[in-house]
Length: 319
Image (cartoon, rainbow, N blue to C red):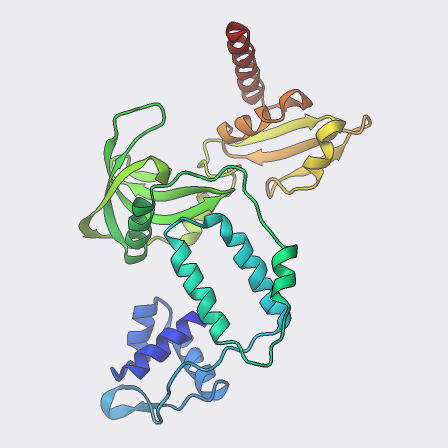
């Protein structure tokens, strides 16, 4: 729909766009553009015609606005749920754009749709307990540079370091994972794809250089075996047991695509995962306190044991 709206704007502007120019601007194939144009002409009844003399498309009649969006009550309900979910991102640079998008959708709805929005407002809500602290101008600069494929010069503060470092990066993907923002970018210093936390970016300036956006599947393959966002560092069979007090919490979620659950005789549950890195799963395990026991791999057993001993030592010293 967004693509067809952009095609509509291009034709309505009188620039006589053709399939090739539209495909290049929208980063799709000419076949996709042809299908969109056919849908707009045949299903949306837009007066589109190709003019050979101008090598482009025109409207043969005046089109005041893009056709009214047809939507069912069920679809509107789904939109309401989505809007509620997005409330956790209030205060980000995306808030104004999201609100504007939902307002446009609401204005384009047919008059025949009748729903009890007030009832939905009272019955649906989303909450987040820890809102990530993000410097909004930095996040906005990163998002815009990523969209335009512009290289960035970052002043980036690494964990535990007060002095920021300069990094030249190609911003590939901005993701919100479990409520936290992450930037996946090619780091020219490390010559590799790296993960940056926007909250640690002191400043972000465009260098003037551009880059070619990589295949999205490359990033997905890179993170396929991660527990959250860490890149693959090895191949680990993780086996963790949870006691009966917290077993239901483990059963109620899919923590990772590779997970397998084994029921234990004492009412507990065993979680088995195949992961490519261990730091994130270690932090997650420690959050379950005394209700968890790590069986495999040995590196994770040792790491969790060492962390638990350090917690006890610090607590004893403070007492």
